[in-house]
Length: 176
Image (tube, rainbow, N blue to C red; front, side, top):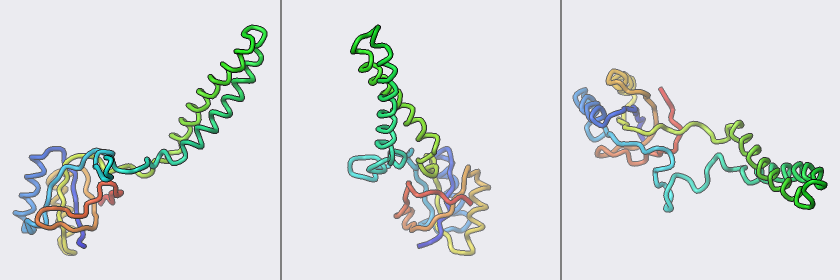
């Protein structure tokens, strides 16, 4: 495995120009690549499509929603019981249903505040990557920045014949 320096660019033309700049600077053409990194969820990593079999943010959703439903239903039924003289036996039932619905929505919004989805994903867009040896790393980072890379990251992997063989779009970027 080699150290890989990768930069994020907006346009394909820019990415191709950056590849040419690396080749002109003496980097081996077979160790330079450009590619489009798809938006999160569109990498088709699993056979049914998508990136993961289960969303990381949905890990505790069933328990949290059930807790909110039960609490909301109990409060709604109690409030509905107070309306029995006006609504008859339908009051507690409707109160319980509305309470369960509101409770499930409230518990779901609480989960978002906890930020359980993990680290932010790698942004989509054009990427240029170059496999470097120890002494080339600083030069590659500087060239990426000179060429206008929005973000520069360091990774480990294999680039052969202009193809990053083991690129993992789900890995957390290590920005330089």
